[in-house]
Length: 440
Image (tube, rainbow, N blue to C red):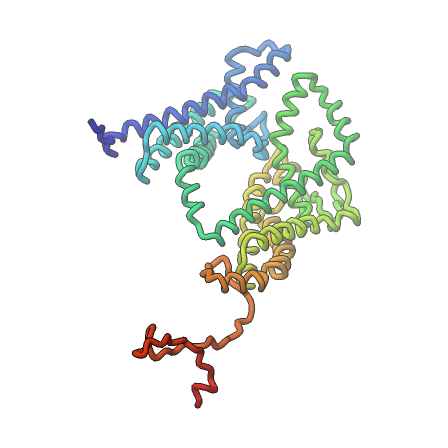
């Protein structure tokens, strides 16, 4: 007996429950993960106020920080958060979205929207509840900001988990040219991350003594050192974004009226917090730093070589592919620069970070400078391969357009007075008719 698949109307409660349970699971597991270092820190402290209630409130606040919710400590708001910790709730929400899509059997667009919307609402309500429970006189978060931020995180991450299969199918259905554009943009992003990592490590090596002095000044101990390590991992994406901005030639604000740039010397010193990663910030500009933009140009060259080896198009279309891929990488840098701006203290430490629009524009220009000449020089199809394709009768497609002059050739035409044999049983041989014989 064949079992009929339930209709959308009968599945509606299942859709709501699947989304709600998925987001609840992601939130609870996230709180448990961030509560481990919180518990170790309070266990190592000798404060009499430590207890399960304090641990729960601190863990709730840490979970909100991991979701990129600004927090107030004392009288100071901190919005420049370690958004690298955002990977914890994002991964959990993506996994929960995949599970919800599987158990709810969501097929249509409306069914998937119900699953995602229910998950976003429940996750946002949990963020609001965590904000209420964790707020004290010394530490608090904005309830409205917590609700909106957690809703956006759940909408994007949980939605990606639900729509992952659908998005992958649509990506594979794109034309070869568009697939090359997206993959080349992803390649450019990976190369930028690799380049900025090398520059950041080199800067940390130069400032190693300063970093050790900051570590000793903090006197965090073993448990505190573990917490500092986790915070440093969370701030690592921010430092990589600052490095990309600095390498592109954009200025990075590190205090009121104080900026760092490879081309502009910093004349206004700023007392930064004693955080070891900040030892990588250069104290002055040197002649060698003027060549840092060439690293981003080199990333564009690699992207251009990759494009040239995978697609053949006319000259203008090759330029368009390189520019579009550079635009994708620049858009990612723009988003990272926006997330890497914020405040970590009082007036002099407000509005820290690079200029997002200027940084993205410089990265786009430098990538185009490196990629466009390469795709123009090496994007042509060899004439021997093109001639072979014509001989064997291959039909040219969009991704195999030959950017070369077309030589008009007159093909000989064939004429015959009979199809096979004439009336005298003599075989008729088809002869080519050239222009002279036709004229005669």
